[in-house]
Image 1 (spheres, rainbow, N blue to C red):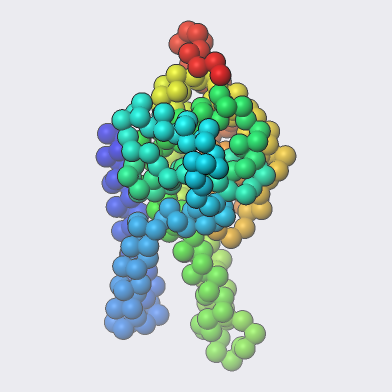
Image 2: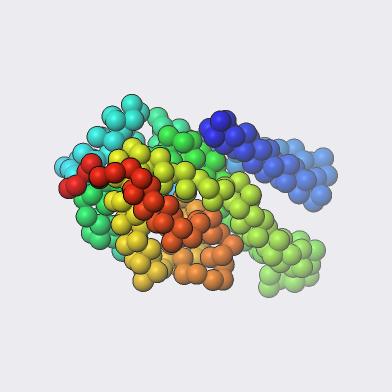
Length: 293
């Protein structure tokens, strides 16, 4: 049922984007603008669906890594993928000091899991394994489709809003900027991008991935310990809420930005303390931890 609703939300999100682009095209260009907008909508929807994973990975500067480079990481992912009876995703590492991780892609056969260098260095093997279980659960729960598409669409809308500043709409005599309408579009479309993410992505998906990942690894205490370290590291080394990062942040296991300001617009993570408390309760109810490495 969860996967079914994610599919419906993805379709609704793509439809909403199409309607928005067509409305703007008709408003500014009449029938000609409508045709141009329709072609643009097809391109943007196609890019969002088929290339959202690449956009997310690029925003973090993540690169594909081989098993020779990260043998322990490959072993963890292979073991957990086999336990779930699912194909192994592609693995990426981002040269970011902040401890974080995310999964992206439109389905398990086209999925990718990315971790930062910071998280590999900070966590123990047990904790890193628990994080991998969380990210794989996003893949298996089909969260990554709606999350990746929402992020890609929000990023493109923000980009269009920025371009609008340089388009001389409504003030052709002013050579120094985009005129009143360009500035107005910039102010309106940016928050729309953030709102799209908020409407499309429920915070409950993180709770679901925490629970599913803990069951997959059979180690909720390991994930609770990892989240505690990740939360501390993300607060100590916040990323700048700029550019494409703002439309990728919702994919990460922890909010990468400093609390407050624009970060609140893009915050789709429940409070870390609540996530940790749920996992610790789950660990208390499940008996002895089976994974002790």
